[in-house]
Length: 189
Length: 303
Image (cartoon, rainbow over all chains, first blue to last red; front, side):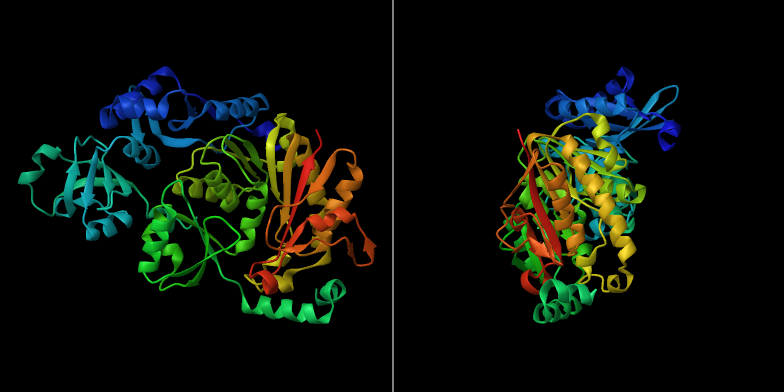
């Protein structure tokens, strides 16, 4: 009975979505990192206004197809690579899981923060200019926030052009935190 | 409960077991080597005041002897450098499974993900794990853990594991950590002593047999099934395996689990004479092994 009510929610992502994801990844981490992570893989998308995206291997795709043939969908699969909002234009917001893996391949697009700033970020707070020790350039729209030991702790969105940070007040919020690792404790699951 | 223990073990061992359940057991952290170097992490945690002792029979696992603040609230935990097991017993089924990179493994009752993530680590995140669980809430938890630990080889499926054969897939190995009364968890959750009842036990046995039959249908010829429970009740363990051995006598064999810890399974209990191969199974106990009560059995489907 439950099966008959169930609707299919996963599909292979269409080309427009694949392109937007590729452009964003290449812009932030370069072609080599994109190829390392995405070559030979398939991008899946859920069907909704805000779609979740998952990057899966060929072997996972075989299982996915088997599930589809029986009218089932995975609950999750592979690497969660972010969300897209499909309206007139496609808006993609990458995931911390993906950017963490990309950062391992290509050391760029990250801000190194102080211990105090790190604690704040892990409570979901934003990054102030005074909390930034250094940057690993180039910085894109979605920089990783990392510890002094190069450990990714959050993904943010730059609120101001990094080239103009120098002239700002120390208390200015320069990166808004959109996903941080403190959520694993806060969510309680 | 005690009456059954007396029939199983006699007075001396029953008393030792009950004392151990009252004392509790140590939790364990398992290093996630997909994200961090084991030595580096253990050094870091020790420098923060944690006293950790290596679990001598399990890869990447450490007993937590002393914790200056909860080990689940560290920066390293948030980064996904380790997983916390409530007891070391839950490591044993995965060690017996012996996962290898590139394999296709089905974890039939996967959430909240301790065993799934251990399998992924031992597989170096290469291959596929089909992680099945029926509970929506527990599936959420599984997804969260898989994300925290940075694992990518998992396909999470919320479904009744008994129906997995409908997918017509054939796995190299299957882990069936079956739902059970949890009788072995009394050292962690003493309240279970009061919740245990025979009706629940009977219901569980029927589910366990059905799940094991499903596991036999999804493992390839020559493939391995690890059947385990966190129960010490023979009804949920040896008697379930004995029943399946009788039913599929020409299709399956029992093998040594490869575990270097544990007592042998019962081949005679409550006046029942069982298949002698059940001695190849392993039983873990708090009073003997410092773990929660656990049962592990390795079944191989004939070629």
